[in-house]
Image (cartoon, rainbow, N blue to C red; front, side, top):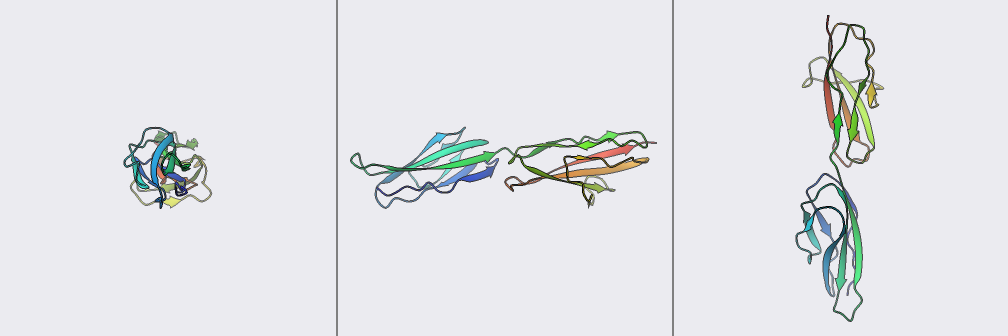
Length: 178
């Protein structure tokens, strides 16, 4: 039989299907099998290029095995597919504080590769408004300092440093009533 090549490992973000791309055997026939991983079905296990459907976040290992009858030794190769959970954030929540207070705004990210960058921004026109980058505010926490009476809008853009999942944004209304 032909040597087998299961294709390149993949790192994906919260997909429900993905492709397997093994080599087409010149001699023999190939078959995909799931070695390990959560839910997912190979739609055409005898095709070198096929799709896995019903995927959920987790790590999968698939084997592409090419054989040519019982007298020949088959060749196998494995591919690892990491399907990451979507990025989400909790916080910061809308807050109302007394004049002159300076609470710290905090956000917690999860999902994606687990390695994040942060950029805080401010707006005077609400969450749907125009945003201005706050220079140096690149942490999961931000302290805007003591605020005077008024309404302030802040958001944080959380980016997956490894570029696997798209960024998420969290906006809050910060009020210092009279």
